[in-house]
Amino acid sequence: MEMKINKGRFIFFALYGLLVTSAMGTIVGTYAWYQYSARASMMYHGTAINNPDSLAIGLFSSVKLEDAASLELIPDENVENLYWTSNGISKTIMSYFARENGYAYNQIAPTTSSAYSRGDELKLRSAPSEAEIFNPNYLAKKEHYCYIPLAFKCNGLSENQLYLTEAELESEGSLYQGVRIYIDNGEDKFIFNPTSPNDGYTEVGGPLDMDRDGYLDVNNSDKKEYIYGEYDDVIYNDELSPYIEPLPYEERTTFNGRHLENSYACDTLNSKFKTADYLGQINVLSNIGLGYEFIEGIYRINLTVYLEGWSTSVIDEEIGNYFSLDMKFMMES
Image 1 (cartoon, rainbow, N blue to C red):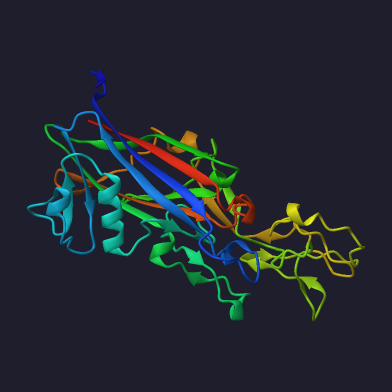
Image 2: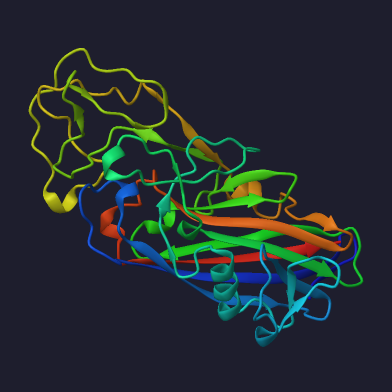
């Protein structure tokens, strides 16, 4: 364990998760991100602790865990439904915890944060029904995303602070670019994009090719391209679009449709779509204190891992690919 006199003692631990996408059913109807019939299978490798005698890791549960003893989960003496682990958070423990609390434990689905700014409460949205396809404002179900409410305590240390020092993503294809981590420490709330060095945003509105016919969808009543999601101002071209050959079927995605002949195309450069702001690696890693003292000596951080459906990497061609997420934290006194 590294010792630095001027900054106190450091205790490192890592949380590893492996998420594998697989087609769990037949995709029917439209092909927009929020119409996936696929899910992402999820497995946890567990936690690695450099000094288990000094650092304890636990999980805050919303329900009593009846089988806690069989998994060597130790109830906290003072905090109801807080459980500590003696050997880290294993795959078995995480799967059991998530299942009992109603969250994703082996599958997740593409969702969206919708418009978001730092400090907002995250409200993930999911797919509308086919009957209400133009209303993408349904709240995501708990089983659509991964929620990890972590607890820590360091014996013998005082005035602790928790930092995220590493967040590494790997995947087949480009699916990893759509992974987001919402971090809520009780005092600060933000979306972290672990694949971006810098802060940025994802546009959460715009024209789409829902039926994958190669052309962006058009409102038949006024011949204007339909705008999905959220926006502040939409500007259309004054002239009707000429004929453009569509992309070959295998190259088509929800996002890259051509303008339909005799339609009024959206001027995406000058239109103003709402955005979901995120922080990048430079701002987050080792720089932002994440944990807050839940009660004396116990620190808490809530993590929500999800796939941002408005990321252009979350497309049908990514079904069957996998991505892995490795996170390492540091507690400093």
